[in-house]
Amino acid sequence: MATVPSYSPSIWVRMCHALPRFDLTMQMRDNVFTPDSWEYQQTLLVLSSLSAIALVLSLLVVLSFLIHYCCCHRGDAGRDAEEEEEDDDASGGHGYSGKKGRSICCVTWVSVAAVTLCCVAIGVGFYGNSEANDGMYQLTSSLLTANYTLASIDLLVWDSVAVLQRSVSGPLTSLEDVFGGNKPALVSTRSCRRLSERVISLLSSLSLGRGVSSVSPGSLGANGTDSMVGVLTPAPPSIAPTLTPTSTSNSIPAPFSPGWAANTLMVNEDYRWLSYVLLLLLDLVVCLFILLGLAKQARWLLILMTVLAWLALFLSWGSLGLETATVVALSDFCFDPNSFVINSTHFNTGTSTEILDYYLTCNRKMTSPFQQLLTQSQRALSSIHSHLSGLERDALPRFPKAEKSLREVQQILNVTEGNFHQLVALLNCRGLNKDYIDSLKGLCYDGMEGLLYLSLYSFLSALAFTAILCSLPGAWRSFSSDSEEYEDSDSESEDPFTSHQDSKRFLQWQPWL
Image (cartoon, rainbow, N blue to C red):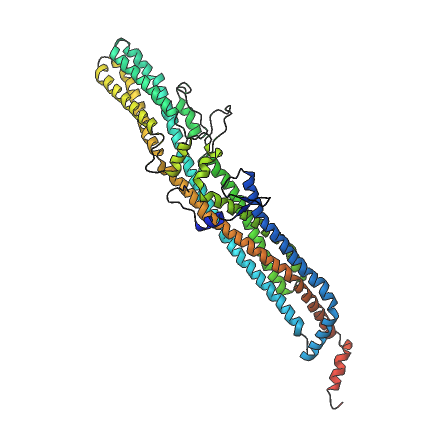
């Protein structure tokens, strides 16, 4: 397994990656991350369908309890009434005792325990949502930093090509006109032109496959730098743009861009985070108002919360299915990310495998794929500098008019050499490889852990709402009995002429009457 240095798959990634995979025909499939393959998508569908099976089982359990409360208790109504009268006579007053009291107490405690489990699940969900958001933030930050580095490389290349092109069409042409009668000076000037065109050709071929078309020596005008800087000016990592070609007439597909990926992930992550926050708040509101309804014995509030509990149950099992498929797919990617990035045609468009392997692995034993190009460019720039020094020493005393053009060429050469040294530093694999490792750590460590916690939240909340829906009918039954007894007691206390049975009992206990 080829992994990048200082990154290794976590234990959770290994465990999820080791899960068996079956397609829709229940045939075993491999666990290589190939999201474009229909066979691989089938394995994710099968894993996510397990939550649908669990949802059906939950519905059957709730339905069985509803049948039990609606049908069985109707036949036992008379028996319960006789037992209640006997229990009341034995207790000497109103209140719950015996079998009914124990049943109501059991229903109440089951509801409270289910609500408590739901609150624990909500806490786990908030933590998992925060962890997943932190992982995505680290991923997008690393991608934007990499995009900033690539934008800086492209800007340095375009700027160097533009200023060299301007020197060829401007000062060097003037020097040739001035040194027309001096053959050695003319040869040196033409050598500078040839070497400048050579550097332009070499730098124009330098591309990391980011959708920017190559530059030909004649494609830029005198102020080519100004025309390109507006398109390729690098921005800070937080707002680094995705570089696009200057011409849209090209039908070549745009390669993968870290800036585009970061912007897309940020938008999707905002919606994902907000969706989970709303789901968690819904569960929290349902749990709190169920407790309030149990405490206040408000049937209308429990009926409303029952409807919302049904909605929360479906959302919990549905989110668990999505989270299961996402966790498994992410574990497959994080187990061997280099193979997918190198072999994927989406990432590989316009970028050679050698360049990708150099930046993804960044092994000290590997040589840069740009080493030969940079070496030839450096030698050409050194030769230009030598020729200009010779012209300044030998030809300038005899041709004073050439001083201005010669100074302009030297100034352009200094700018080009400064850009070249920055370009060599940016093309080193350490910077981009660090961004790649940071993005993997954010996605495969924090992001994976957050998704696992969210899966645990969905499972616990689904169990809690199943228990709540099973226990609430018993609470409604106890509330109706309580309300009737409460109304009977109020009517008797307000109308003393209707309590004949209590008056007879009172007279029987008076020995002097």
